[in-house]
Image (cartoon, rainbow, N blue to C red; front, side, top):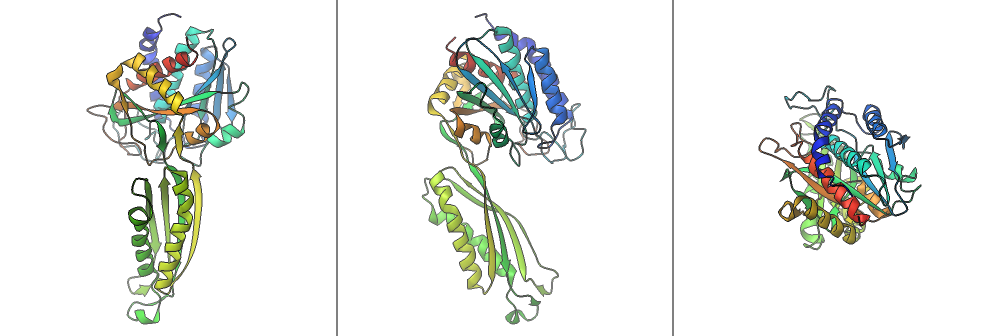
Length: 387
């Protein structure tokens, strides 16, 4: 096996150019046609035949090797409905759409791994590259799995990554076991009886009842769940009322529920509905309640995470591989992790000027991270093949 690390430095300018091209032309979930075409043309130039249109806009490609295991690497492609505020030459040209979560960097990093691995072929195993749409919603991982991306050939393990400015560029974060939270949704309507603001005794104030519902829901985390477990109940929107002197007859609440533990998750619908119904009733109001299950929690495979950590130490040094705590953010890579052994690591991308977190209109990242991520992925694949 040739000494391949110089290849990463050789390809880095190309990766940066690809990332910037994607960043200039961001696309929302299941609209990633231009991004998918760029990925397909880049893979074709490497001699890796892509398969486009998977689950809508997804792209897959197989770097076939000799008899041996098949391992996959996944990148998500979609952007967010955010107006970019960065004054950089590669800023988004699409109004109110921006790569504010680093998915442009994920694509470039995985393409970098493909560039290096294609130069090392034939490998003693097969690598499948998966470029997934719609991670930010409604979710592209499950449709891609249903379309058969983990078959033909059958994938035995899968690697994923996410940029983070919480770590400096040059480092990666590794998490064992529970890694990202389940992302469920709640919709609540508190139903009262309208009336004149000057005569509250003749009405049932839905706003007062809804306010008590919001406050009471916070006791789930503080008083109803083991304090050693993690849970978040957030009401993100509240809407109701007509005028300053009118008592509202209806208030609509929309929120998110985040859990790491599946047993805790399973108990949440009953706990939340009990509070909503009983608090509403205490104020003479009625309610409607809906609980929608979103992405499951992401659990990293212990053995594969151990291999990833060992590979990263070999590739970038012990001091640059650090523990990373579980996140209450969601990630639909969880569906892949439920299907095959998987591990998802954090790729440090922070710098003195790249400090904003994901989903911020000024998010940007240190592009040297693309080379670091590609290096770790290549080493992990080679170690999986025991090269």
